[in-house]
Amino acid sequence: MNSISTQLVPTLEKIIQETFDASIATFEFQATRKEFDGDITLVVFALLRTIKGNPTQIGEAIGKELVKQLEWVIGYNAVKGFLNIEIADAFFINELDRISSSANYGTVALTDTSPTVLVEYSSPNTNKPLHLGHVRNNLLGYSVANILEASGNKVVKTQIINDRGIHICKSMVAWQDFGNGETPDSTGLKGDKLVGNYYVLFDKKYKEEIANLIGQGKTEEEAKSDAPLFVKAQQMLRLWEAGDQDVVSMWKTMNSWVYKGFEATYQAMGVSFDSYYYESETYLLGKDLIEDGLSRSIFYKKEDGSVWVDLSDEGLDEKLLLRSDGTAVYMTQDLGTALQRYRDNPTMTGLVYTVGNEQDYHFQVLFLVLKKLGYDWAQSLFHLSYGMVDLPEGKMKSREGTVVDADDLMVEMQQTAQSIAEDLGKLDGLSSDEKSSLYQSIGMGALKYFILKVDPKKRILFDPKSSVDFAGNTGPFIQYTYARIQSILRKADQDQHKLDSQLILDPREKEIIKHLMVYPSIIQQAAKAYSPAVVANYSYDLVKLFNSFYQNLSILGETEGSIKALRVSLSTEVSSVLKDSLALLGIQAPSKM
Image (tube, rainbow, N blue to C red):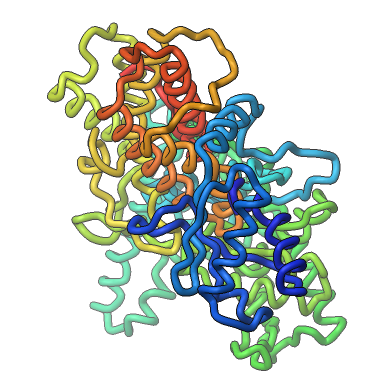
């Protein structure tokens, strides 16, 4: 609900009581259609559940009283079941004044009683570098965390690092057998890339062994399970879980290479974390939970010793929780991680898992199992499920080495931004250092906006070049408009004084003020939907409104002082909201472009 409807409601409640002897719990508003006069529309049809009568006559009666009781309501027209309400220009000018004097406009200040929400994102495997899929995950999770905080939540940004399991052992086996002791220092490679290369190498050698075994007469299934490299990886996993000193030492060394590489990628991406969890630690807690569930007959053990949960009553099926050899599965460690997070954050009122939609079923099971174990906080768990990122070339596959590396992508975005900006002559007059910084801001702004402007549930076809466009619904277009406004404000008289409420607004000015007024509700809407797309597209609409205003009305050239002051104030608040909304998306707002 925006400021107009909020201020109308108390008087509407009074009018309904006095005129119709009725009480309405909620009123429904919408934007007035362009073919009618008015600034906001009350949906009279929605009142007919309580008030009986002709909707047009009801609307007329309410409109008449609104004009009588509120000096800033200057007219109305009732069309069938809709009451279009006209608001005085003075109201909007006073609203602009209020916005300009508001500290951190649009955000809710945190207090000691603000709810605590954890947002998990990234959650990489330590057997490969971050790729394009991780980019969407990180950007989405980081932005959602920002939005939830702006909407009034204490937020803890967290991740779970998948640092154990058969996939980790595959990289370790390949490095042990084929690495000749090479390190990130000896090769000049980032640690995550070096380890990732061995994951790819394992897959290549493993396929060669499978082919040889099939050629010797084994079935494909037999060949896959009997291949020496796979057997060695399984044995290494068992040794790791048993605490074998040599295996654990190699595991720690290789993981340390990866963590250093990840940190450099996160820094370049502009994301951060408040807490880290490691599956190597939480899977043991998960095993304890499973023992607890067994003792209470919530889970059951099969003849081979594996542990399962039956979710058929919930419309699902049986789910494996622990393998017959006692080793953990993903569900084991996720149960342990969830419990540890709650213990570390006992005031937690929500936990958001930012994970791709291929894991929808997994999280459905996880939440049900935690509820079966009797944890009340399991009701507040939410899976922020998002679609995959596709490329024109097709699907990425980590084990085959056909992924788009996150570091390479960010460098490519910067180079694309440089090429397009130079062709357009957008950055003439800037120093080389200023240009280099801007190429990075524009490239990352293009990448982030392209990904975040799409509803999380939708799949994305990513095209780097079209994302770096200085026109249209893109990050650089919004950044460029912000920089343009900063240029205007640098030349403007910065003396602040109260605006003249007697001015008559141009329709373009009024539309911008209306759009600024809904910004607080946009943040709440985006938080409720866990969707940065709501903020992104609001920003684009604001930029379009400003550019129409800028192209048709003079700002610095306006000779009437009170009008110029209004337009400078309007520009100031547009720039402030643009900077804040871009920050929610993790995007920098450069002052020069």
